[in-house]
Length: 67
Image: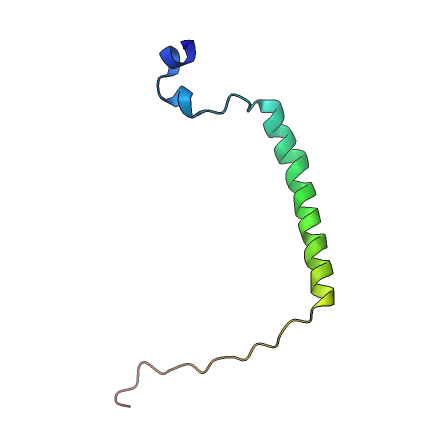
C-alpha cells in the first residue's frame, strides 16, 4: 500500500522479486550458460542431420519494359 502511495500505478507493474543481485546473476551467469548450451545442442543436431542444399531463385528484371 505504501509503494502505491509513493509510486502510483508503476508500483503495480514492477516485479518485487527482482533485485540487483538476481539481475547480476542472470546477466553474468545464466545468459552465457544458456548460450553455450544452445550452441552445443545446435552443433549436435547439425552433425546428425545434413543441411539441405538451397537452390537460388531466378531474379526478375523489374526495370525492363514489356514482357
